[in-house]
Every structure is written in C-alpha cells, then in structure tokens.
Amino acid sequence: MKTIFRNAVYVGEAANGPQVHRGHVALDADRIVYAGPAIAGFEDFEPIDAANKLVIPGLINAHTHVVLLALRGSIEDIEGYMVYRYMVPSTYLLTPGERAAIATLACAEAIRSGTTTLVDPLRHVEDYAPAMARSGLRLWLAESCADAVTTEVSRTGYRFDRAFGETFLDRTRRLIEQFHGAEDDRVRVVMAGHGPDNCSPWMLEQVTGLARKHGLPRTIHLSQIPSEVEQVRALHGCTSTEYLNAQGFLGPDLMAVHWSFCTESDVETLARTGTHFVHCPASMSAKGPHQLPIKAIRDNWVHCILGTDNMTEDMFNAMRMGLIIHRGAEGRSVQPMPSEVFQFATTNAARALQHDRIGRIAAGMKADLAVLDLNAPALNPRVSIVSNLVHYGHPGMVTDTIVDGRFLMRDGRLVTLDEVEVSQQAQAATSAMWTRFAREHPDVPLPLIDTY
Image (tube, rainbow, N blue to C red; front, side, top):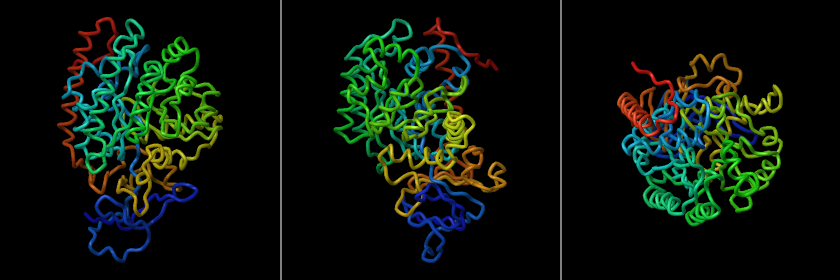
C-alpha cells in the first residue's frame, strides 16, 4: 500500500537530535520513502490530510512483561517481596489461554499509546507469542532463563537445579526456531537471563552462547531488588555488576534493566563495557521516586533507553517519569532536555536492539509511526512540540499507529484487535488467576480486590 501524509508536522532526526518539520511523509509498503517539503511525484499514493496531525516515530518499549498486566492495581499497594511472592507465582498460575488473553490486552494498550515495538522477556512465552504477533506490533520476545528454582525462593530460598534451567533453554530454542524472523522479520527473539541472583555462571554462559550463535541481543534484570543484592553477595562476594563482569556477560549487546542498587563503581564498569541502561522509571516509582545512582549514570554518559516494565504499556508516562528522575539527580535541573528523553524511547532503543531501520522518520526507514492530534489540548499552546510531548503527552492524543506500513489503529479505532472482547477476556483471565492464587498461596496477603 502506498500512502502519503500531506501537510503534516513530523519529528525528524538531525545531528543534534529530533527536529520538527512541516511537510509530507510518504510510505510504500513497509518503508518510509520520503519525508520532506516536496509534493510532486506521489500521484499514485493514497493521500491523507494530515494538516492537523503530528507524525512521530513509533515509540519503542525496551522492557515490558505483558502478562504481568494481570497484577495491575494490586502489588503497587502492597509492601514486601514482590518479585518472588507475587510476580513469579502469578505467571505459573495462568493457563496458556489466559496468558494470551492478558498479553493481547497489553498489545492493545501499547497500540493506543503510539508504541510500535515491545521487548518482552518472561516465561511460557510460547503460549502467548502467536497472539502478540497477530496484533501487528514489532516484537522482541524472550524466555527469561534461570537455573535457581524461582518458584521456591519466597518460601525456602535459592536452590540451583540445572534440569530446571534446561527447561528455559529448551523453550528458548523453540522460540528461536518458531519466531525469530517471523512475520517478515517483524518478530525477533532476544536472549534473556532473569537476574544475577538466579543465574549461575553456567546459565550465563548458556545465555551468551545462544545469543552469539544466533546473533541476538541480550537482556537481564540488574541490581533490581534487595534480595538479589544479598544473594549475589552471599554466593560470589561481590555486587551483581561485578559478578556479571567476571563472567564476561557485560557488553554493548546487553540491555541491563533497573540498576537500583548499583554502586558508582558498578556504573563506571557498565559504562566502560558499553552496556545499555534500560530505565523503567514509572513502574519503579510506584512506591516513591526510583532511587538509583542516576547522577553517576549521567556523568558516565551511559546509553539510556526506556521501558514500562509492569502493569502498563504507556510510554508517554515512562518518558515523563524518566525526565523527572534524571533531572532530580542534578537537583531541580533542566537536564536532560525533553529531546534527549524522546531519543531514549526512539533512536537509543533502536541502537540497543541492533536495528538500524526503526526509531526515526527518514527515507529508507521502516514505516513504524504514531500519529497524534495536533488539536489535543495537551499539545497546545505550542512553543516546543517535543517538550509538550515529553512533559504532557498521553495515549489519548494518539489517533493512528502504524507498523510496517500497516495501520494497527486508524482514526482512533483498533484495526487488528476487538478492544471490547480483548478487555473482557483479559478481565476473566485475571479474575481466575487471583482465585487460584488465593487457593494455592494462602499464606501470601491478597490485594484489595473489588467484589462488585
């Protein structure tokens, strides 16, 4: 399909960052073939009047767990041991169909939020990968590998079992075979270690080996929670970063997530190795502003990208919270500027994913775009559109989302998903999961659950 957005305002990329232009953006099949002021030569393209539209690169969510949307509105308001008491058990209590239902709802929210790419490491990914692929989004999927028996950690502590670890490696191999390069390369696989506390040196070696064999980027949670820090210190006598570095796991193909308990020395090591920092500021701030060595991260020029992590797919919120957390490191600073944070969610993320055809609006790039209503109150009055986007943007201003030249949402209506049906199925799946949770884990406090 050939389409041209006429007289749009669009966010292009220049040497000094994103630049706003008035002009036309032409798409031919899955590619952008033109972005600029000329109008001649596109007579056979379907014209779309975009005089009141803003066209931006589709946002890239570099770290999410779509199935954990089942926990939305629950563990944000509970104190304690979230990862191993709630997150891990919930993923095992869902049936394959329920996982697919919740993952599909997450895809619908991402599309409504102008997000075109999701990076999703979790477990049982084979169960819901087909449903995610049908949404039309660009995907990097991963089975989170671990050889500590994660289902036991909250009750009896850490026990390493190589057979348990092989389960995840086998799932990963099947995921690569079935999905890497699928849907005309719209779906890819990324290698994932769950975390330094539950991955032995053997498991880290297996993850890296498979990544090297298939040319895949890697990801891992890093210094995420206190129990991880304590476990790594007890086992290896060092920080999580020092442990990964000793195993040769750090590097420019690694997206390390969170960094909450990294030391300044850790940050220097991560910067030196070219490891990418995936910041999930909104989810990590649910119980107060995310505490992490952000000043050291900025002082060492670490390459930053953004994710939503848990309970939402709203990348506008991630950009806004990221701006606040990063500026707070300098004490009410105006650094970083919104243009830099916008790059965290676009060009920086594309670089970390080793994909040079997404994250920008330019000829030859993939036609992954979000279209916003320039008349949306939050975009007005306009002095700097990018500033408005990062400070005040929200999913309600997105009218169209396009991946590979295909509309996933057009004029505010989802095209690839039935939104009502998706929401109802995800609600049923979530209710069933919490019923099982209460039965299987009677010693774990339940969230406040509505009974209407």
